[in-house]
Image 1: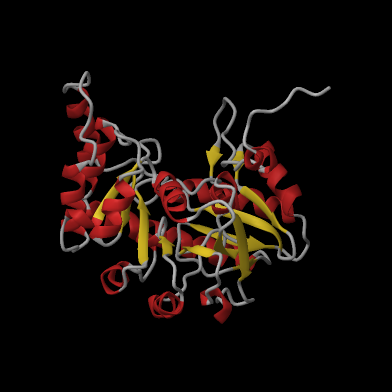
Image 2: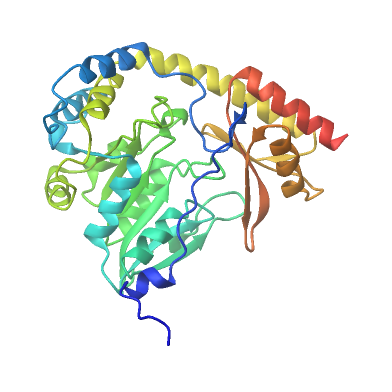
Length: 353
């Protein structure tokens, strides 16, 4: 007789989220997890150094007050009570699902997009439903339709893997139709031409998540945050871990909010590299979706995406091979430095020759 499992049935049924592949020992060019290829601002490194010399035997500020003040000022929010800090934006997403979606209820996400949303629903014992993007990466009207079980709608914007954006006007339209919260996951918004921060003040049900992992080059620090109306922040704060952000991360994130000039410089560099990637991949026969993120999604008519992924990996370059049922397969390639991208493109050209 098989030993009885003491885990909840929801956990037994679920498939765990698989993070991006980490390179084995050796010198690899890592273009598979959308990290910033450039080091973080010097002011952030100095802030971490100073914090490391402080009272590490004491607990950190449970609400990351210094960061919330700095973020509210940087983002032109009414005050710090509009911000909730988290251990990466993934923790913020976990809190949102935990706070709004119960067992037997449902959340909605576009397809294809960030599959962690499905995992978070399954942890709750909740259901999830997908609404497919159209061929032009727009969302149909049904994305904003309410139903009795729907408790949360999640929209990565820019989307992954496509790098495409749903306009703030379209997001506002969906939010007006829904009678549940609409979460705009803006992990890549610093690389885009528009964002949805203004909608938060216009509609209590619109909330925006952000991360410092991408544009600020702080993936190793793990810091993200939520922008929502104060009454929403106050409720969600009840269910977060007591000290969910460590002192070094708070110091780093607070310093990063003062590095606007550095951020603009990095965004310019990466936009130029992204444009060059798009042009070169297109000339090699790839269909490349115009991206507003720090990666590009590309598909080749020969369909040999997994073989190309393996070829690049064997030559110590990691990209992300992705396959979506009823949608197809392709490669998501992060924007690296010019030298890294030149090496990747050279190998792709060699493979296709």
